[in-house]
Length: 472
Image (cartoon, rainbow, N blue to C red; front, side, top):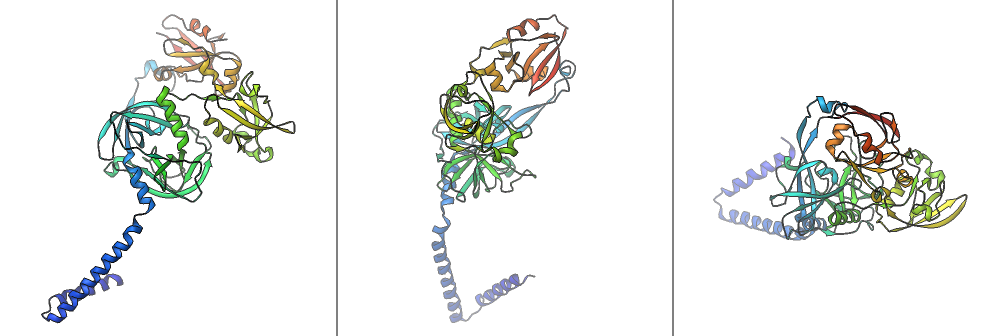
């Protein structure tokens, strides 16, 4: 038996022996000692009670009632090896359950979470801290910023208090709330982890099938685990400063490298989704050298302009190809991710003040942003579910398209995408051996008899590929 356990056992035996003694004075002495010990314990508890009720306890208490759990049902479709499989291979799908966290932004049931939590959702259920399950409607989602907005039919819900991420101090306390591992832990109340601000302004390099741009992120060592995505990250006052989004981990669990989306960006995106169902992107009209130039950024002292859209906002401001962007809105530009971070938080019509070095001379330019050319372009719909636009110089610059003609696929339904192998962003270059110069030509080229097979050539991510379609 360990030494500390043996001493505890001896003390307990002695007290029991004394309690059974008939000597009344001795019993009084024991009772008095016990009363004094009890008084000292009560005094100690009173003294430490206030110190235990720290700012972090108050922060968790302030934000906790507005934190919800999210249960997502989706279908994972079996992949087909070619478009022919659509006609010969039965479509397979299995039901998949996903979990995440969110927080109430407005008392009328508006909830913010991560887009990747509700991606491809067929059914979303929100669970309140009291255990109530409420069906939720997806108002909109933005894969680029990884923000989505849900709505439940419940009024007067408790809401979070909003803080600022712009004045965070390295080393200050942070509280992460969420529902890690969801219902595997048996209840719906949010759990709390605590850490500090490890860094701010972190840019995460895109990789794999990542669709979001994780830029200007808050880094924290507060434990963030699967199921925490979409939960709030608060400061020591209980004010939300970020939306928990991702971790760096080889095991899938927390290793002290957690990242959160700045709350200002999340609220801006949520407001746009609530108003119009989607996010209106600002267009600057220039392209910069990307990942291949990362190793050269120290010697360049900025970001090199790789292309300018004709008559676009940057061109009108006097920015030229091969200019070097040194600063944007007072922010130093070290690499292309810094420039992407500036663009990500712009509204249409915002002005960007850039410091430019061209041919050895430094100057300042004011770029007034506009709508994306693909948004304002005329849309042509073919085959009911395929929406096309003409490839113009502006569209070519916006999407970094190599071909100067063709039809850009702006939108198509998931069913058509699975059936044909085509994707949004593909540029139709030719149908069989007939080149496509614009979107209006595609409709006529696809008007074929049942049973005919067409080969469609497309540009995808700078490469030319093809897909074969059979028409019924």
